[in-house]
Length: 461
Ligand code: COA
Image (cartoon, rainbow, N blue to C red; front, side):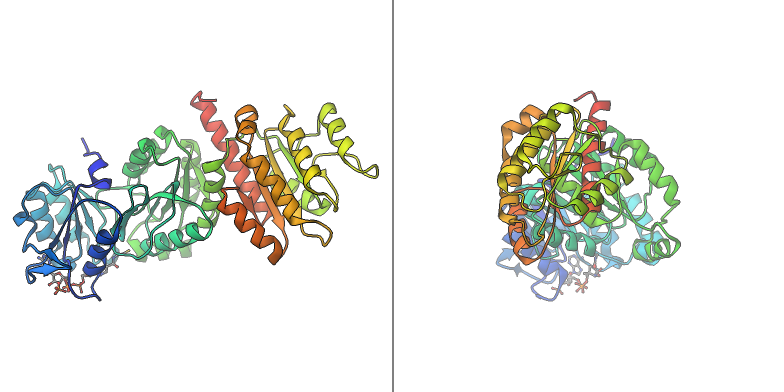
């Protein structure tokens, strides 16, 4: 029976093995990150050559520390990692993060096997080696050596690439996508994606799970965890092509495997495959704040005909449908449009559409039983007033009562320049899912539809 990861993610005591007074060392950065975290716990630097590090009493070995240790970060060269892991096992440490590189990613499989033997039969769980560690934004704990903390939110991320994981934090912050946790899984000697999916599935601070995966070691466990998970699981599986697979082998020592088989298996298990991390964030942004779509019938509202056509194409290419409007909805929208146009789906509000037309049309589609999700688009065609569009979409997305009553997602799509960008930034900060491309918004809507399907299978909607 594998040990659960609660103490690993919420430790009461942490040791940093290889902590250093030298500011150029990774062991210095790791200790500093824990200390500057707004998180209360006991912290112990371990280094045989120092008496004090950053004002804290330093211990020669972890076994010399009085009391229990929940988590240890290891930042010593690969050659001495087995010895310190052995001491962690003796000390009954719950979780160990091996930051050190020099293992299977460079063909050193023996060292990883040696460590596996050391933890066998013990309760010690290992993250890595070759990992940045993790950042638990939910409790403000930074258990990594990399600099930067994510905004708080409900997306949990696991990345097999530490550097990309860090890049994802900055991207998420920039995009106002909040994270609950981000974990660098490294070489997955012990803690693997399936363990993290299982943990995130029951983590109250996580609503959506995102994974960047290069190689899957235990395909069956991975798929079983996705299938059993009660939350949407977004998967970026890299190494799709031969060139990508070659790069994967030299990066984390993983075998990329057959892309088609992975794609089919992820889909069958109920996961959602994303092309890249930008798409993962697009989908996560929609899933974390909007209700799922109960079906694939999408209503489109636009102030530009071309925009509507692009959206319709992108939706249909992704398996969504653009049904005709019901008679009732037709009549309602007809009343708010100038005489020269008549409503259709996409609903073209024409170039001079302002707040009222947008709001009234969105409300009409929300109340149309033949529509499961709505995309509200605006192009800054020289005549349009972006603030009226963004004001209307903000109002509709935020009107909680509407969501509770109709349970339909609303997504935004815009095309324009600087003036629009500033307003869109405000929308993103307010949690409104809004996208700068017809393809991206259609893919985000697809994720909401797939989530609706998953919940129907679970009989939750
Ligand atoms: N227990 C505790 N500390 C020990 C020790 C032991 N048994 N043996 C040595 N140390 C101390 C060292 O004395 C040193 O402290 P000092 O600066 O006070 O001298 C500290 O541990 C680090 O050891 P050092 O030999 O200086 O290694 P380093 O800091 O140059 O490199 C790693 C260690 C782990 C950072 C490096 O080997 C490595 O793997 N780098 C890549 C990490 C990486 O990129 N990971 C993947 C991220 S995604």
